[in-house]
Image 1 (cartoon, rainbow, N blue to C red):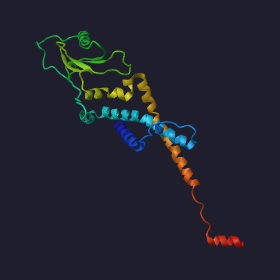
Image 2: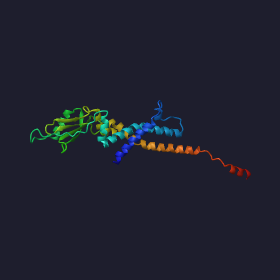
Image 3: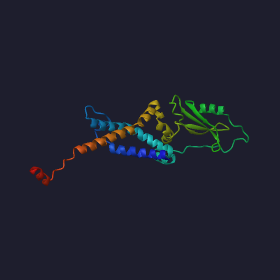
Length: 244
């Protein structure tokens, strides 16, 4: 529960920062880069803006997909506003075609799955269970990043090998594709090693923002202390000093 609260907090914080930070027209690149020949105080401000702006998109994606992973039933209706997002299926077969008919072996199911999806690699094979009496075969794209463990699945009849349900990328709606891809967007595996490296680097962004933000706050307090006016000497004390 505490992880889900952290993800919701991160998402709300990232969206509010995006609203507050968004620069005026024509100053977007200036707010996302470091300038040369500036004072140390200005450099800290530019570093704060640059770290936040470049990491912001990644943090929003990480937070939004994290919320979707923890609360799928709450996020699915929101995704459905843009594209159909259906619940994850669990198809079952009412009864065997012939009483006492033998069930197919795992090797037979694997051969049927390869015929059904020849352009994909089989990632995982789930045998029938009490709540789902069909075989589930999970696939991933050929040559995909090792961290992307599966992307789509099919369900096969345990007795005939017939295709009961297809939830692979070539038949899914954009909403179902997003729901299926959430975990791999969350850990960066969708973009391969570069994506995982980006997610790793974005994890350091909050620390950089905290440090630079603290330095900015401290510099501002010091500047206010220097600029405070010197209190005037009362007239009575001036007279005393004049006659002393």
